[in-house]
Length: 478
Image 1: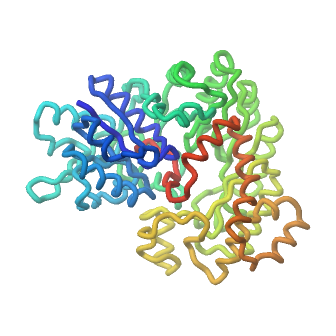
Image 2: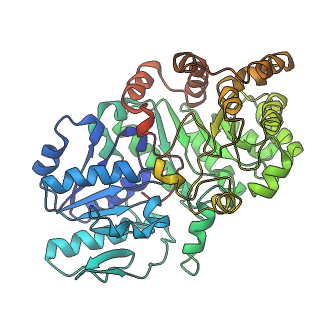
Image 3: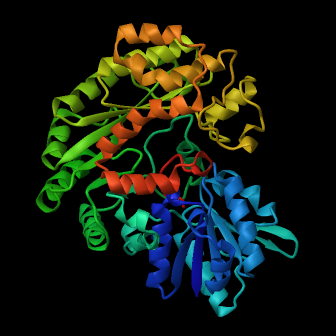
């Protein structure tokens, strides 16, 4: 059977989709992917594809665009459309939308394989685990199957699926994940919520063997140019013995390719970072989030002190790695003075790459539920879609947060420049000026990920429109 994946554009490359495609191909099915943004005759391409099943990954901010894509597909083909991803996990009632035929919740590899097999044989699929379906006008919600405990049950991911689009193939940084799940329970993230969905279904946090990761990297080298690697795991460093083994093996086989990863302040020590450096780790990203300890601990559920952030950052810098700091502003209960505490903490740790965003509240997470309860967020806020340059948590000082967002890097550079930014807080930054102010951030991201200029420009041209920025987190769900 031909299974076709439909997505908006390349910013939403999903490693989970490549896992689904890899499994389908290993069992005799054919797969293809279409980006709506990159197909002039999108509906015709879908119609001519010969699809027997259409899969639409729907991430947390992708509801409207995914339903729009499905509506076009329904005009072009009679193939059933199955939705999967983070959005259906949080909103299974999406099954009631007329564009949605089937919802696959949880890990989608085996449910979609079972669905494709049954459709090909003309069999009833209504009792397939993980699937929510419509039958005779009624919604049938099937039991969730256990999580895949041994990730090497799956064949190698089909990384070439996305490479039909040249800008995806030639982008010089390639992403990998070493496992699934996250050890943390941040109030603003859906991982804590998902862990509850899988209670009794096996270990939530799982990891591939080092030899399997080496095999995946070797396969990518065969398929496409690769100047650097980024491990997109929420936390790459949570298992020190694994990281030490990985680093030694990576140094033997791929030391010419620098890699970057994400960590948390609890997980790294001098011995680990030294071994990673010997393997050619070029940079590490740490979640600072906010410079106010009370907010970080009480509201974000990230239990570490400013002093621990400073120590972890010093360790990264000691070994000559690029330090990226993740930050959010316009948090619930945050004042503009709290936001300047974040500015100063980034200055103190001497972050090389300051990544700052407005909070994008994820529906049905602990933080959002509390913010709605306290009247800080409209109960239907998610219907507006993700806004890139505007705070979702509105205060009487929105303009000041917007200006600080634009000038955050300048304020973090020195106390004198912080004073200047404070004087400019009520200035509205014109969009054209904002664009030029953000260029240094883009260049720092380019340096951290070791992205070549040409491949970066081509990728940027195909993916940067804000309305297409629907992927906020890396997860094991498509």
